Length: 289
Image: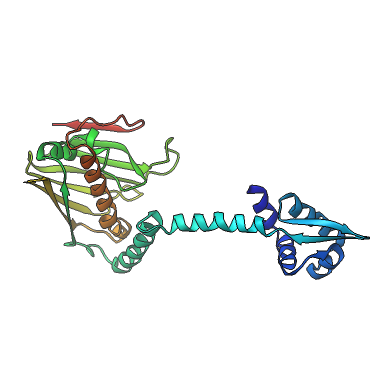
């Protein structure tokens, strides 16, 4: 496939393919129609032949070239498969487009400090586990690291001190950035405000701007309610201290935190009683109670 793509990348060779799609033609005629010298045209045709795009045969004093449609159909199949992957419903590209729409709207709204103060977001997830394992996943750093990032990201540093006044550090990178060479995708710091085991957890968290300043402060309130099938988790986000530069962060709250909760739900649904965190290479996770 690499050879085929390389062969078709040259504009002159692509023109030759277009001409041969109409009918087989000899080298001299192809050179005239393509506006190229015959020796150059011959070299281009030889490249296309090695890539399996054209075939040729000698007829008297002429060499006539013809297109091999199968090679183009194979390429079309591969391109179609790639397009289908990118267009999958609720896939990464759909999420990227949703975030782009939200980003444009928030940037237009962010005209002065305090522009988003009072904004709130609510989330609810029925979880297939009792309140005890759910609580542990909300408060133990090793378990938080399994789910507390949007898709395609990984925790690179996490501190969660599950006590009133306890410190929180939440840093994450691209999931494929294993050596830390790409810039940090996000970092936030805050503190725990209220801890009622199995019932309520409240904390504030402030995402940091690239220069180190605070983008905004999120006041996050989580309530757990036992049900016949597990635990209902209700989450309320409230925004204060919003800056003009906070638009990019606020645009991602609904999508990003929603994905995180979906990961939590999937983990607990797979094994409602498992609370042993998998080892995570390159992740600093600390939890203090």
